[in-house]
Figure 1 (cartoon, rainbow, N blue to C red):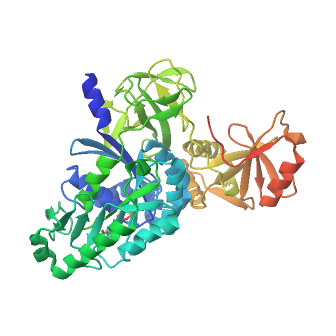
Figure 2 (figure 1 turned 180 degrees about the vertical axis):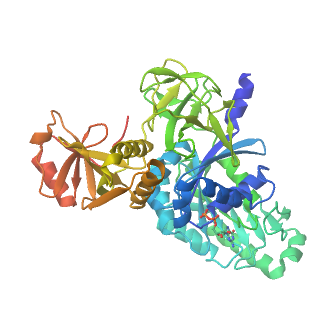
Length: 531
Ligand code: GDP
């Protein structure tokens, strides 16, 4: 029994994929599913996705803007591993959501388009990964097309992102003539056959780099060029160091084409070997061993109205230790109550299924009747264990928000409250004014659009927004704090957040300094670290 549990934990691999939109994240995810046998023919994810868009109309906004707003999670098996992939929003305006998803992941895969290199959103999302300190693996995609020189790409990763890199494999033939990859650790060449446009698993020939067969398969010129590049790589680059990879200081780089499947399997296999089983998470008692018996997990994401017809709200839980069983009672530590996790679901390939049991590293979605907050811990025993909080990012854009039709005030307040519980927006009130005047703060302006769109679609409320000129926010910590006695500048505003903590909004950094000087003993914080 115990053996079986340990095996389940040890074969789990949970990671997130990040990329600038269009780099190929969806295509790569689909190909990983194809190799895992979770789908038979590639191409089905896109069409399923299109269908989903059609039924789940709030995702319309994603379609219209060509961006991915929500993050989803998929599970499949490969070679004895049980893999959980967490998808993240590609747009930087949703980087807070990305951060929360990364909290649930043990590593990240960064997809880069070989023609475009490191793009704007890649940079921003990479920084978010870096904050988490998790291992980052790089898949340079679209090698079947003309792109930048591979050496140049490696340099770009190091210079623009500031992380050392180590090519695990090297492309053979570029600019529309991509034939295969060279595996550096095994000194092996893998040459792929032209397949059915990547719909099915691609066939290949693998052998030692010096095997004569590759002179024939690749032609003498290409083989010669590869030998020269291998030599260059060996003398010029960093040494491989798995410890550095696991600390997020060195990124292993793979080359391939998600579209044609060239290089997908070599990437997946090497990646699965290097990335870790579920890592221990920090609590007030220190690290919790994923292999301990006590079931624990935390809520990292809440999403309302995934299915507008049912008005359901789902809390996504990352399991950190112990075994989850359907119907089990757990302690909801924050509210100090024992609860049953209703309708636990898992997301297998593209289907939602009821989960009977789940293990550390897995993500389950449970029905949330409004009792969960992001960061809540659940545990089986009475230890009252509490995982480290998920920080709230500082919003950079603010607006006053009203319902156009005052008769719809109730729905308006409900919608605002639910969306703020999801972490999609942050809500502030003026002291002594209260809910009569709500100020909404967001990290990226696109979140305003999502707010407007979702309030209209899901709550039937049209809103008016008046953009404010504040750009900075500071949470105030001060002994004996008093709203009425706190000294401000002309261009700053004092408000309270949803937990009634005092917060000041500023137009510029100069004001922050002034307010700090005027209020002795007050500490102004730009990120609210929850504990
Ligand atoms: P995402 O926005 O990162 O999820 O990107 P998608 O997976 O939707 O891909 C964006 C576009 O690039 C689509 O038209 C894909 O067919 C195309 N694409 C993805 N991978 C490759 C690849 O390896 N080679 C080529 N030529 N096109 C690709």
